[in-house]
Structure formats: structure tokens, C-alpha cells
Picture 1 (tube, rainbow, N blue to C red):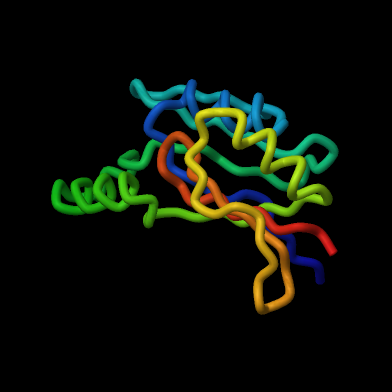
Picture 2 (tube, helix red, strand yellow; picture 1 turned 90 degrees about the vertical axis):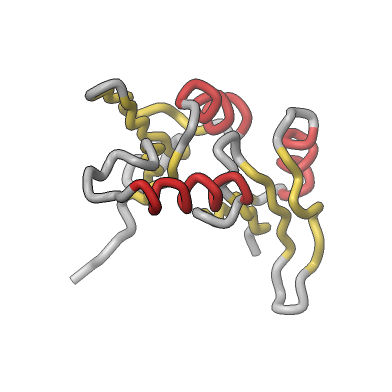
Length: 136
């Protein structure tokens, strides 16, 4: 039996800004862009890896989310503590330079971590924490 991660979900507050970040800055391809009820779900993923995707979704689409939960989610997104994804590249310094040349918010410049990896971190337009590791 084989189990793979097919898709992860990250909230967005502005689908156009999120698409521009993931497509134009990170180089992901847009796989689907679905609208429903005034909301959009955009699936992106790295070119050449069709089995791995990130779905950029409206944070309040679940009708079971209460007003208090909506407020908490909004506050956490604004602080960058609601959602995280870890990506990997073979050129962390080159990717960092490309990201730094945009208006992406830098959380951490590339550095060697005591647990054996080199990484950096940014926030996407919705405030999601994007951590990027250097491939070994």
C-alpha cells in the first residue's frame, strides 16, 4: 500500500494576490480555479509534480464556522500563525533572492539550523507562513 500527500489547503484573503505569489514568484502552475457563491478555490502546484498540490481556499467557506471562530481565524491569519507549509528547493539562496526582490514579507533569511537543514521563511499575501528548506 502506498499513501501520498495529494493536496494541502491554505487560506487566502485575495485570490489574485495569492495566484500571483504562487504562480509568478514561486513558479507553481495553476491547475484549477473554481468559483462558487462568490468564493474561489485555486489549486496550484509545482510544475512536473502533478500529484502534489496546494488548494488556496476561502478561510470561512465552512458554514459551521461561528462568528467567534471567523474573528479568531482572521486574527491568526493577520499574525501569520494560522497556516504553514514547508517547501523544498535545491537553490535556497537563489530562491530567497527572487522572493526578496518582491514585496513578500521575509520572516527569516537563509540560515543553517542546528537540526541539520538550511532554510528561510516568508509570508504569502494571506499571511501564511511559508518555510523553505534546502534540499540535501
